[in-house]
Image 1 (cartoon, rainbow over the protein chains, first blue to last red):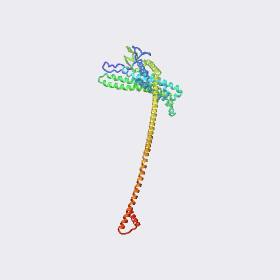
Image 2 (image 1 turned 135 degrees about the vertical axis):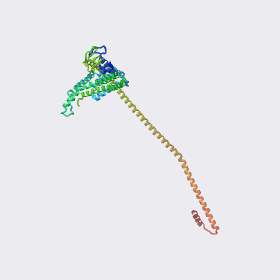
Image 3 (image 1 turned 45 degrees about the vertical axis):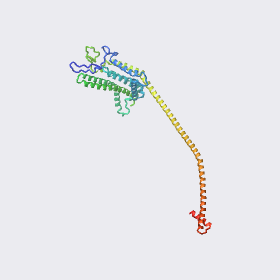
Image 4 (image 1 turned 30 degrees about the horizontal axis):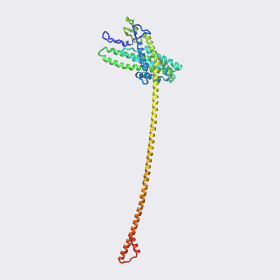
Length: 251
Length: 181
């Protein structure tokens, strides 16, 4: 995270957005395509955390699971059941894909809560790619599985005929807005929470306000812990809902 | 986006070490982030789909299997225990009826012996009783006879002493009539 500097004249200077700056890990220079940056570091840590839980944690293959294995199995069962319940039994083939998304987002979110850390999922670059991956997957799967019948998703059969073209326009707009809302919801939530914590931290420079500031940061932190999980959950369940549309487009 | 400054600016989005606007909208950084994101997702997907998920699935299936097996074994043992209990109860009931039978037999035997043992003395007692009664009756009859004779004689003597003569028949009739009364 970045610096909270007190201005030279004793006024407060906030830099709540500095924590989101992408910078090279080694030396200074432009951020190129392959530059190893703090993004690389925190994504690598995310990978390590996911591996530790799901690969190392289950390495013993114990019939009576230990703590790590229990949590791994819990995560597995949670997402598996979600895919099965929300997207349907025939969506189980997409389970590894959805599990990847969930594990990445949930670990990136929680690692971002560590002080001095960098929250990869607070960047639109990341969430837009995630959302577009889902969008294209769903669209391609929809057309491959259903052919042109997939377009029935936009043609609401249960509505009166006169209303259907209007609804079709609305449905098409909402379909294309999906990746936008999908990505901005995740990044926006995380960015806002982290920025608010920074602002409260900036107020701590005034001795009189600092106790209140600490309390506020603590409260926000608790909220952010909730948000971290809930946003990962929301992202995943929306992916399942979209996938269901692709597999069973009938309204 | 921002004005060029002297120092070590890595991007137009950062001026004097702090961000200009939202770093999220600094498109200079996007290719880097997208590249590393794709690498990350590929690595996670590879390990999850090849290693972690099949492993967890097999562990869960194995556990399910062993639970089902254990439940079946428990069911089997339970039914065996029930069978054993039933057999025990049956044996107990049989033993009980057997005991009842033996007791009844013994009782009957004892009763028979008792009956045998009491029958002979009873008969003897009855016979002796009958004999004694007969003797008593005889004694009584002879005593009666004697009393009658004495009464006749006494009556005859009394009548004679009073100076009247009475024939034997009248006296006998009178005595008999008195003795009945």
